[in-house]
Amino acid sequence: MPRCRRRTLIGALLVTLGACTATPAPAPPATTTPPASSTPPGERVYVSLGDSYATGYRPAQASGTGDSFAHLVATRSGMRLINLACSGATSAQMRVDPGCAPGNRAPGGPDPAGRTQLDAAVQVLRENQGRVGLVTVVIGGNDLAPCATAPEPLVCTSRAVEEIRANLAAVLPALRAAAGDARIVGLTYPDVFLGAWVSPDFRDGKNLAQLSVTLFRDVFNATLKAEYEKVGAEFVDVTATTGGYGPLTDVTQDPTYGPIPTPVAKVCALTYFCQHTDVHPTPAGHEAIASAVLATTGR
Image (tube, rainbow, N blue to C red; front, top):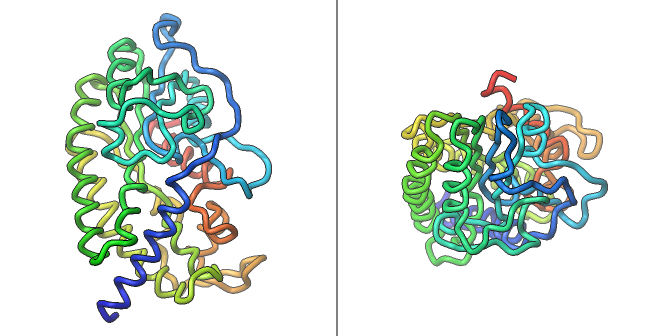
């Protein structure tokens, strides 16, 4: 593929990501999380960090309600959820930006009281030592957005991935030190840009979908996996578990779009990208992510 074409496609990919994640709206209400100090003796705690995937943000066009994957994991594992995630967060903001606007917090999530996500998590983990059953982290999707208008999108993308790596290299050891031997699970995302195959918003959607497979598998996810493994954390490749690496020559009959590649049909069912060009999961998507997390815990 010519270099100029690759730049155009990656630029389109990043514009879409920024538009769908940078200005999140409030998520549906959920049970309020009590302060960490009120944890009953013996109760297991699940600490969730990250961005809008963890908060359970739903686009305005989406109908109905649904729980985030974090809420589903907590309910099915019998743990109390302390969801510190903040919609729109980047990997840098997780460690340096204090506070989270009320509309960007997870439903029932505690007020960070001027602390960063990392600082709030470290405090919660220390207060609950011996009772932490799980920590999940999903971050990095918003880091790529500024590259959309960069003069050299490929160079910018490479730098953004390196920044994600550097921020995780600072965040994850601090979480591990505070969590002790508690299970930490890092997550990535579905390859939502496979949905460009059927979306009328993309003039060259099929090429964009094909390019996105390499970007997710060989660049973004490979970097995330390496950093999580350095601190003994498990990595859930959500791209793989949602069918993102399947061959685009494998065709399925979709009720809306007709015969399309199976990986595209899966991402259309699990995210809002095909319908609304929105990267966030549908209820089925949150279910799939929760199942992948629970599989790592043996539940």
